[in-house]
Length: 388
Image 1: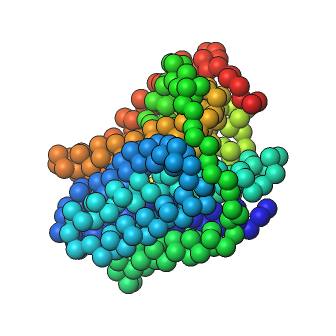
Image 2 (image 1 turned 90 degrees about the horizontal axis):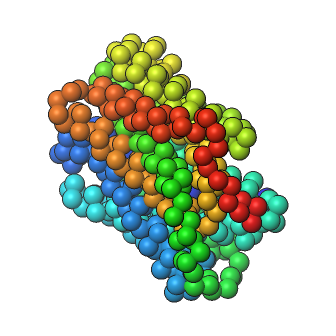
């Protein structure tokens, strides 16, 4: 496997760490910016909104302008470094919010370009394995990046965590400059054939399920830190390790789901949402018990983000997996992420307490489960040019 593939994985790791690390440092950011925890949670949503809006527009724009993949990735990473530096220096919530939106826009397009470069530098038969390494950076962010950022926050302050991401991103830029070969300008994208895919109602059903699944996960995950400290009674110093345990569960679950997602896509998604809804409900009831909280945190990790291989496999079976179909799917996932985090915060703002995001997660998981049940009786998705 070329070294560049691992560098691209490091790039995704850096960007995703920045996206999720706010969840582990909510108390520090709330104190520093003088805002309630609910508003700090919205910083995760703003990043996701940036990804939703920025990804499709910037990707299409780059293709139409015939910017090479290498130039495009370096330009996007430069924008990311500037926006992340502004976030690290922010003294007000408004500046932080704008910076988070900008980093989300840059990160979304970076995902697509990184995968495209990955496909160019490896043999066709190794593309799947290479892509798994690149996307593996996302999973490692929850295992290593978020706990590391939270630990740095507790010892050196939240700004140090933001600056660390800047340093990692600059390092990735240097390595991309040295290792990515020169490429021909991108061809102008033709949208006609891909737009036909959006006439398929089953594609929109698959998108809806993806949004609900991710929304259920992040309605709860976005508020794990305050729940574990203020309800479960864990000391703040234990949050990095607890989030690390959750991240390890994500990686284990992702490995298992990834192995069987192609053969058992819908049963895995149905089983995952059933277990997720039960585990979040039990977490809400027994959040005051530390042993139960840890156990349910692990179960939630095993069946939460680990659904990604299955939801991606479903979309790729439902429609031809062209760039627009996959880019819109990424946007839908981030809509679910942002909406879940936002709706979870509404319960707290309305006075229902810190357990309310867990119940919101239960409700969204049940809706996702309902959306999948019709598929158990037969094949409701069509195989469309998967072999092409």
